[in-house]
Image (cartoon, rainbow, N blue to C red; front, side, top):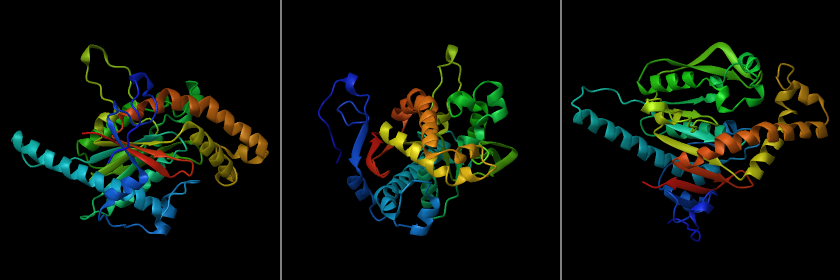
Length: 330
């Protein structure tokens, strides 16, 4: 049963709200939890604690409320994809071939909890009957190295679409979808804040691939003359956007920065080590500047506009827990 708001004009539909014009069905977290049915809880509290990111309070109750129903939904999509694949093979009279990986894209702002969602889903999906092989790759490794960003005056645009090697992303996803073995994804260090030269992770024909990053639903200018130039999201079978009001994401970003200066930033090898030695007031001023000058602009210009392209939107509230779910209508 969806929840509907009063009817609004099309000009008022920029907000994340139900309306007569919306392509989504909206559910409260309580209603969404009912779709779990008999999906078993296969994670422990200790495992959830290990999977969650700094300042993210997701626990077993949140897994029960949100992620078990989501896991069940994704299972239905994967099975439907397999059925369609087999039917198309028969329709085209093609020889038997292995089903290509089902790719799930996860997008959203910095500090909104994408990494936790991706890791929890990876563990839940891998524990389905038959133990499917599930891999997780983030877009961080596809950022241009810092040396390139400095050379091209892009260090203050890190995380913006132009800071990524889009060609490498498209080649990676194309190879995954083609069923290529041992496809390499570059590695990234959050300690040094840079791509690790010569270090890769190999993804070998998974059943499911989760691809997580702030701009994975980003589109570019349409190509001239109808040339076939794919978007990253063209390779996705299902996409999820992690959402929250802007003022909450702002607060979470600053809170996380202040926590990190007491933990990871204290490592002398950390790119941000210098922030661990300033006063709390100075650190908060720095965090506010980074948010306002970089991350907020990226959110407004590049990330938030991709929200309507997602199949599913998870909307968080002040406690960092999901309050509303929007599922695109079929």
